[in-house]
Image 1 (cartoon, rainbow, N blue to C red):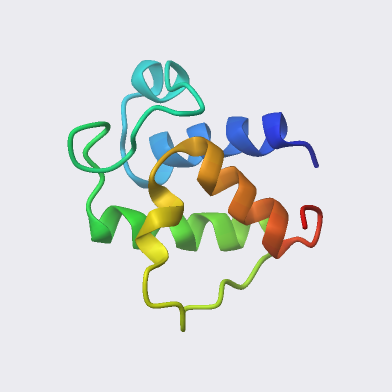
Image 2 (image 1 turned 90 degrees about the vertical axis):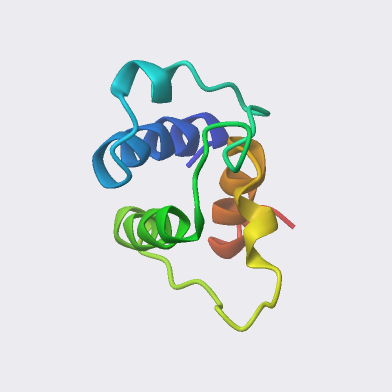
Length: 90
């Protein structure tokens, strides 16, 4: 799976799971901030998105990491997380 395919899936998940309007989700760039002053996701949104990612990509994320929110800074870091967990990015 390519990063572009993952990003497309993430945009769809943002619309379906977090209820971001479709047009707004589709307009997101790789480096558009997803938290606070950007898209405005909060920690509950991130949990819901994580659950969707686990279902979508068949992954289990390690929740023992203390600072997991940094993965949600933008679509680039989030898609890279998926690639790392899938073992497709070192």
